[in-house]
Image (tube, helix red, strand yellow):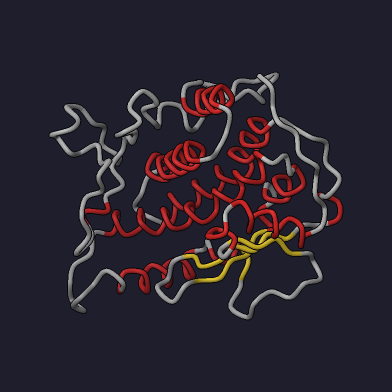
Length: 267
């Protein structure tokens, strides 16, 4: 399988410009900065955002965007699920763009939780991620996109999923289903060679173990989280969004019995 190569960029301005050209919408919600650059006043590190007091406060604010009346009841599992979808929805597409453009320095910076900061939207969801690119992470050897993505799953996504499942009533399966669908949807939309795309999706969703495991077996967290043979209804697990007030069931929901005879529960 031939992989297209790209020149590695080391300047944050160039890296941000690359994302703006490739994915202008996501470039509004994802910035790469240098250590000396100031962060917005309301921007805080990931470790602080994902602790119980800050997370709980964000979810209280987030719930109000679904409540037309103050006393309207909220399904908390669905609420946490939707917050997680916003979170991964802004986090992962830019990283996929950089991985597929062979920008190893960005992916290695992303693997360090200390490099992440973000701001909140007024509704309590994530508004913009800020990734600090440090000097010791700039010179990195070129790696295959699948290798970069697997490292990302182990070093960044896995600890975040574990923390979210600790803070919320949602399970790790719930949050990994969001990660899986975001990977699947965005990669399916990218203008990639069909053979390359097929092999990448197969490795991400059909393999029991990670390729990067040389001396040990590491279970693949995205294995069988997507129906690759059903591109119209690929999700296996329901995201619960329809349990929130005034929010319809999504078109690809596996709970729609008219389209799927069998579905798995998420909790």
